[in-house]
Amino acid sequence: MLFVEHCQQPCGFLTVSDRGRLGNMMSQYATLFAFARKFNMKAVISTTMSATLRRVFPNLSIPTVKYDSQIYNWTVREVEDLKSLGNEENIEKFRQMNALIGGFPAELPIFDAYRNSLSLTTEFKLEKLTEVAAKGFLQKTKTVAKSQITVGVHVRRMDYSVWLEKKVNGRLLSKLYFQKAMDYFRQKYATAQSNVTFIVASDDKTWCREMFKDSPDVVFTPRKPGEKSVVFDLAVLSLCNHSITR
Image 1 (tube, one colour):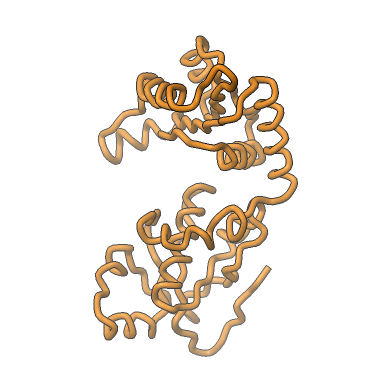
Image 2 (cartoon, rainbow, N blue to C red):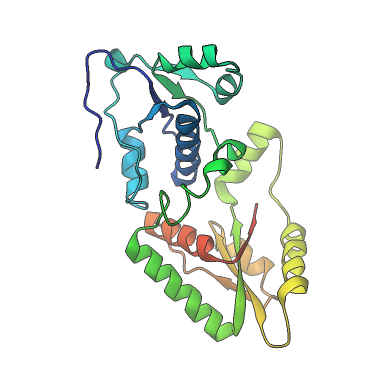
């Protein structure tokens, strides 16, 4: 693991909040990666983020720093602040501080430009044993189903319903959303010689099994409670040819 040594008056460091779980931290890491490249700053991550991400992605390149507010004097900035820096003079002033990107940034328009560097073959390359297990599961599924095309379906429910209602007055997606999305892929790829198989990963398998009980082309990841199962789901979904997500 890479650590940045403390110096007397470090500046020009850029980091990001380490709140949330694996998915949040992946987006936060990608956002940090992109902005550090954009502004030519030294990206670092906290020991908390490092511990969470490196278990899954051991090849991450951004070094870890032991946060110390007295030494680094972090200035919190939101993504919108970074987007509005504008001219080179403002950017240069920004480089003279140590900034922490706050919130739960997931800035796809920003880090999409660096997708090759963030791909499954570089920064977000999966831990080897997980990757091998996921590939084995997919290959077995494709052989049994006589399928060449796999579509990963991520159905998040459980705690997400409370968050949606509280934060944006929203609600969970219905079965109709997933049916329409699946029908699109069936019509586009299914042939007499090959089927399309949908790989469903969810935190609410009971709901999913009931909703998709009449769909013979649906297969569920063998999820059990625990972090390793979540990581396995992520690996399987990432290796599918296409995706449907909430």
